[in-house]
Length: 444
Image (cartoon, rainbow, N blue to C red; front, side, top):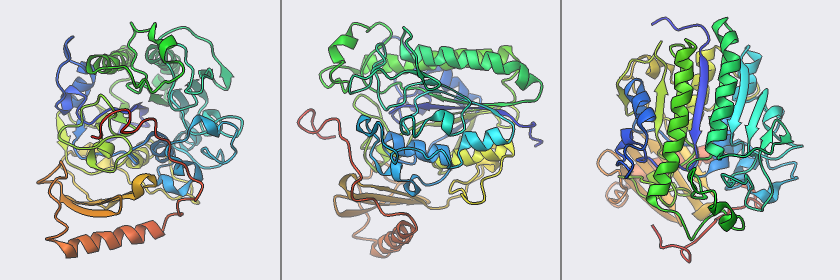
């Protein structure tokens, strides 16, 4: 199949979305109806992956991998689980501006670049989107903000246009959509004339606090504790996803109106597995866990010029693979001094039946977790306990095969150890930030 010249690229990332929160991944309808009709249609008209992963079960480490197409463990800031507001002013806890990134490499290849939404990779003046390859930025710098006051967990206003604070009334999910629409509108003439654009569209939805468009009154109630431990429910959570889905629908409609949809690669995923109100069925665990529910996430790709509709793939992949894929699709080369760990998935986009199964690796400071996926097999360590699972037979990771297949366990453990030696060690001063514990809600 002949590829179109330099596709526009929109990389949509939800925040803490669970594996089965979308209808196309088995999610149930809400009381108001289907939760994600737009994304469901994108999957039906494109490619849906059932065995795709995030690079980490927590937000900022995954975003380091997304930005660099490399294992996040190579950078000091990604050892924070996650970067928190206490890092404001730090010159070490962020994405170094001199490190090549997905947007900087695309920009060097002639793309226009923008991030609309969450950054969460360090604070200015040492770090920031405009210092790492983006020409434009609108959104919060930190991890979680209130949807109406746009204040972070320490009460600091955290909404920026470029590097200047932006006071703007409105529901954050809709504001992110509005700025994305404005960007596509402005970029359309150039794209039609042969200058493509790269838009990172990183929603904060459905991350806490649990606020829909109709819940502005809650902003004052949760301003001293954005974790919103005393509130929220499944219906509110589903409505938050629906607001994001509506915004994506508006963007897809604009691409159609401008004649850009056919030659635009749209990729959708989540930065990690689901949190309190998410649906991860049939997986167990969630955010902060290396069990499947913490790292297996939706992956949808839509590119009518290349991807045949209705594709479903069991290809294993990680966040950094999609970043490498976008560089490949754009004809942009990696920096010679920073070879990519991610691998291109372009063969899969052309043919949904392609399967390639290189090993995937993870580690977490939290609970001393480690994991490796190779084919249908997964090696896992949590709290010093080693497990072996056949995910083809047991996606819920309940039937530990380690006692009956000790040689396979040893082989995979040795492979993980060898990979781990190739990565920088976790620094002694790296922090784990947990917003709640079993005191706040029962264990999963």
